[in-house]
Image (tube, rainbow, N blue to C red; front, side, top):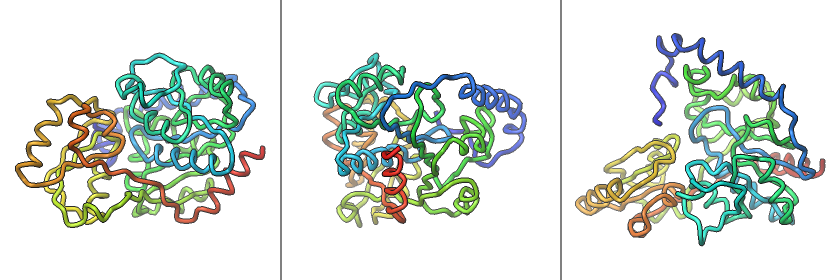
Length: 322
């Protein structure tokens, strides 16, 4: 689903739907109060967000997994497996599973550490620990109170922040931002903070600034590209390409987690050929492409680049010691 414009700029419709948003916010506030979280017995990290759609959670989760491995730990990822048909608990095997079965994000996470999918967070946690995990990383699940968290990082897209600040359906927030921030250990603000959101967040909790850094950016510099993306905010990908020095001559925006079929992709490939341009997409989108077409598309992967890595690393090490 593409977010409606009033979620960002607000307006009469957002105000009209505000009472419904208050109802959703009330239910969200009750969930943690009524839950009895399961204590896993190992550190549990949660990479979540307050708004719907993509904010940059997956790159942060990938960084955290690599960091924990470098620290000598045996992390495991827990994911709901959004968009996949498989029923968990299930350990993801990138050689055997595809995005239709387990979702797109678990396939990326499984390249770093063992990854389990399933709607039941407690069951997936137990399965991962039984196989040797000594710490867990929740990909999303910030609003799910079933599993006790040791350290929660709320990821925020600096380009849009919390939008109009209202709760679904009046705005993009899954819960009242004030309530969510109280449960977080820190906020991760990704991108250029043009709205001065960082100082406002810093009044409530630690804020870590970061940017998404594309790998090997020079390979597309000066090239014409036809770009497509089905992520939370496709414009962010198009902006990344421009920052790499690529000339984006055509762009196609799909819904987040869009399940590509050949009929979606072939017109894009044909247009790129006609324009003598390179067809490009994100690493996450690539997992959802039909195999034959995936080989014809250039994939741009990104990594988190911290403004100041030491405070983030110290927070993670402190959580491991609890």
